[in-house]
Image 1 (cartoon, rainbow, N blue to C red):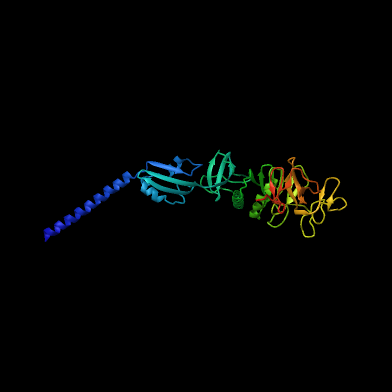
Image 2 (cartoon, rainbow, N blue to C red):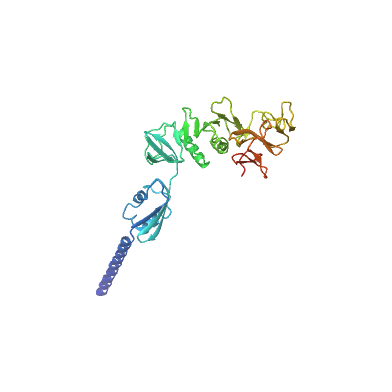
Length: 363
């Protein structure tokens, strides 16, 4: 019995040792054979493929193709690469992996000590460099301490930081990229958009202000002046646009970007100067129908009492309306270069197609 037990014990030991040797050999093959030798990286713009490779493949385990493909199969991010919003790795062969990354989106930058400090929608510093990226607004009038890469912007006023992030994100979503977003000492916001200055005011009704700015800016783009949204609340208030070197607003728009005037008819509809109570052009004696000897046209008005068009001389006219199928000004004089097409829309000299019912570009 003793010999049998010894034989069984020896057999078991040999089996265990053999199994361990087999597992060790298998592990050696797996760990030695499945090593990353080639990496394909796509989706990176601001950061180089070599930088991403060094940050993600950094030790014995991440050099293994099987482990790496499993670890980054659907990773949201990695602490070693905080500039990435997502990472997706795919096993290609025992020595090759394919990585698709998505960098975090930048929404603006602040200049600090001569360096451009770029940040994301969470206010995290994503880059500090001399590089200037297009289609990102510069934020000015912000007091902050020395920034640290991949940490929160050290803006002294936390309320200003929230406002700065909110309006930057809203503008990007609306497709509006101002040259500058500036804050004054009272945290009033002003946007510089080419030759147009947009006064946003305080951070109240930001969503409504930006949503309407997206429509209104199409009407004033290229003009030099100031668009005032400071008192706008999202209702039907008028929004004045004042050209440079003029003391009075050139025109006002409603919440949808349609031009309006200070005078309205009995129903609250805007009435331009030189029109009767129905919005039709009238002469000095108040006549609203017929054709005058001076070439003016009067009759039934179609659509808004006024909208904007470019005439044949490249001048932006704010008092256009349609009378008896013709595009005329507030005095009933036909506007050169503009006509009404077969769909009832107005085509101006720059071939803009305008819906006379709304004053906006026709779809």
